[in-house]
Length: 87
Image 1 (spheres, one colour):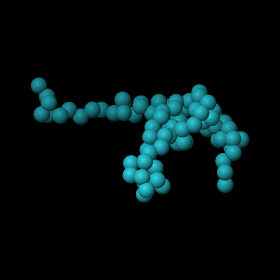
Image 2: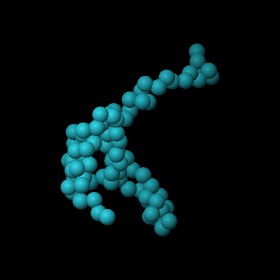
Image 3: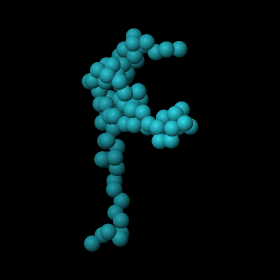
Image 4: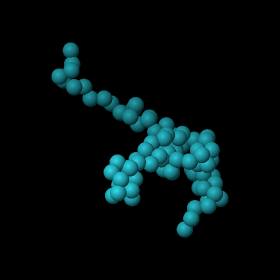
């Protein structure tokens, strides 16, 4: 089953109405970037599992889209002090 443009728009509209936090992963393309331009978009690359068998290290571009700052968790986490580095 193919996801049509109308389906992508409907998903975006549904997510926009959600009260909780959400994160969705898409292949990186201009249509998706424009559709979700009002949300947080982070470009990443990941291993292409299908091509990995024939081309070692094959990767493809992906975007992580969310309605929140995905870095907030790492900033809010307490850091551990390394005793060997302490003065």
